[in-house]
Image (tube, rainbow, N blue to C red):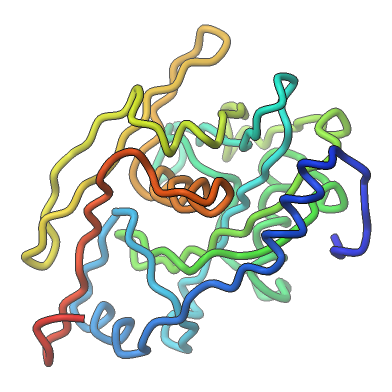
Length: 247
């Protein structure tokens, strides 16, 4: 959806969209990516790395952080529970999204196309405002989070693809900044200690666990939207290159 195309919506969402359009993800040195790929070890943590390289194009993916205003006036984000039949991340909570395909113009196209295929979200309803710096999964997948605003939530009628998605639900975005219903798991990567965050969430008597890469992306998105850091320590791993001890 072009940023000039307005679906109306609340002033809060319009103001948020305008502010987020000004955000530019930070760029980090290209050799960080080279070092990560040489090591062939990528964390399932909340660490993100920015920069576009040819080596990573064949393992490119994007997810849609679709934000809307709830009935209580809070900002909420659409989430899915992946099918238990999938070969990777089966049964886990995820953001709508997936691998890039040849016809996709960019990461925004990928995220919107995947959301349409998975949950029937019409791309015309989504006002894409910015992208975050890429994250990396343990499968060496470069994942770009795309932030979009759903101004008219009532216009979205979920149509699930049962081969990929078991359920679609939403959660308050601000919960990913609060130290409530949260636990953490200590991990180690390339000699560095770091934390994986796990959020317990219940909606309509159904319980969900939001953790790992998805939780990390949502922590980053919530920090940007609310313009404040989380109320807990993130402790990201530090990338160490073979030719240097620190980055």
